[in-house]
Amino acid sequence: MQPVVVALGNFDGVHLGHQAVVRRAVEEGHKRGLRSVAATFDPHPRAVLWPGNEPKLLTTPEVRRERLLGCGVDEVHEIRFDRELSKKSPREFVLEVLVGRLSAGVVVVGENFRFGHKASGDVAELGRCMREVGGEAYAVPISNVLGEDISSTRIRKLVATGEVREAARLLGRPYLLRGEVVEGDKRGRTIGFPTANVLPDERALVPGRGVYAGYARVGRECYGACTNECYGACTNVGTAPTFDRRDSRVEAYLLGYGGDLYGKVVDVTFEERLRPEKRFSGIGELKEQIARDVEEARNFLGEGA
Image (cartoon, rainbow, N blue to C red; front, side, top):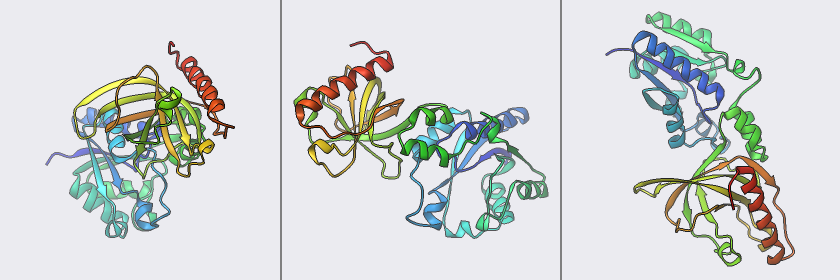
């Protein structure tokens, strides 16, 4: 079997640093006439090693796969992470998984990549193990992309606090949530602003509470045909304190959309936080504020009335 070039990492978010790693793998593949593969882990290692303490995901496996393929690799391979895998030594992981399963001839990782039992392997160890089988390994200095630290952990903190513009700078694109539109309280339609109640994957990180300007792509019917229509959106994340609702939701008002969204899958992007969540004295005050929010979102997005 012909060897392949493997870009290896968790790649949660597929941020600018991850993109640099993947691009290097694609380049090495082109130089050698080899296929390039992005290899990731599923579930997140911390979900197996410390159940209940794993981070919320910036990209679900489906979205991560799409992002990685968009970087130019020929294939995305998800390595099943379990207790057995976590106990493999760095050498066993390289020989059995990277070389044995994936046919890796060249491996590209980020400069701080750790692997093997108790993260005992580093970039130098990866290089030694690959040379043992006649292969090569390269480490990409992720911080060189913007001249500063870029990490999934840093981006999670930004998204969780609503700092989506800064998160977008590190991601290389606006933060995105994907979810099916389900029935909500239907209050929005009674005040002239019907919203899509978007139910994201429970593993996904939801931005901090507040109102955001962004876009909504109506991607497809759930398990159905692709529609791929894009609209400006004014999206509220929160508990609707004016109505004393307990659960937090993602509710997007699509600018210029008049159809039925129930059962459709929607990608919501978060370009700018317009304001924090707020309790209003009543429906009248709330309606006035939503009208201002929508107008501000239109202005930010450059959308006509």
